[in-house]
Amino acid sequence: MFGGGAARSQGSVKYKGQDYRAEVKLNLTEAYKTHQQTFTVNGKNIRNTVQAGIENGQEIKIKGYGGPGVNGGPNGDLFITFTIVNNTAFTRRGNDLYLEAPISLYKAVLGGDETINTLDGKVKLTIQPETPNGTKVRLKGKGFPVYKSEGSFGDLYITWQVELPKNLTE
Image (cartoon, rainbow, N blue to C red; front, side, top):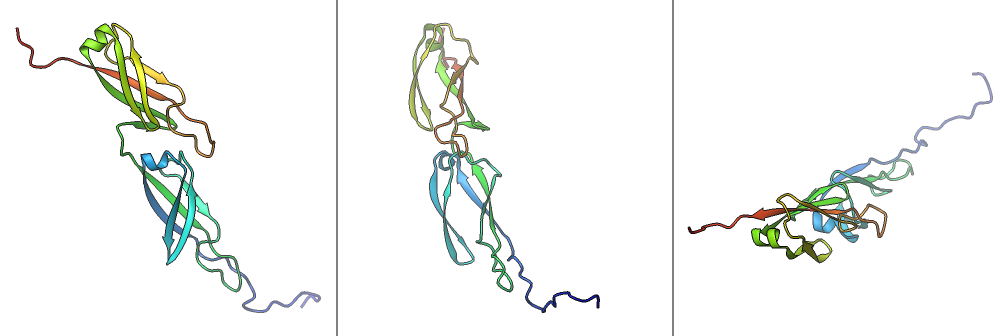
């Protein structure tokens, strides 16, 4: 009507495909290490690297693995939400781990060594004589890995829980 405009043909508009959403459950010990995982979405196997330190509720996007585009448009994306299930004695807060570890009354009073299991192996700790119940010890760099920051770790906080002897006689 006003001249010079390009004519549009019906059906030539390209639309992006539908985005897909999925949920994946990982144990805390699995989230501790970077690993390959295969997801099956609509009959397609998708192999993806899950980075160490992934958080509970964190979402990642895999571009192009959603629904097919319309009229030659790009495929949608796949969004995966991670649920981290704690299968350890540790409590995770961010990249720090917390553990309540029992020690005998004798070690608390006299001192000694205690071996603690971490997610990275065993650590031998020295308990000072006259250690009160609830004493906290910080192990720098022995916590959870920082997401997408290789070699960076949070801290491990250990709270000593003094166990009183049971079934004492006069």
